[in-house]
Length: 65
Image (cartoon, rainbow, N blue to C red; front, side, top):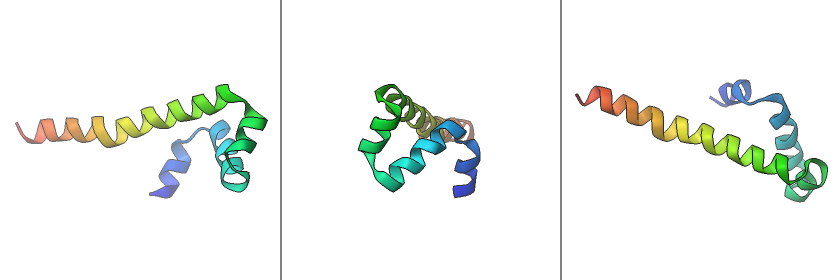
């Protein structure tokens, strides 16, 4: 399942995620700036909301009828 997330994650975010894993949050802010950090947070918030809330709700709604 991890490879699926790598495939759907944009390349520009992968770069900053790798920096975060290696050097931490301060390095990401220093290299990218706050706008990119906010963009990454919003991207993951929307993606996770769709994957874990909206899609299961729609499936449940269609199955329970």
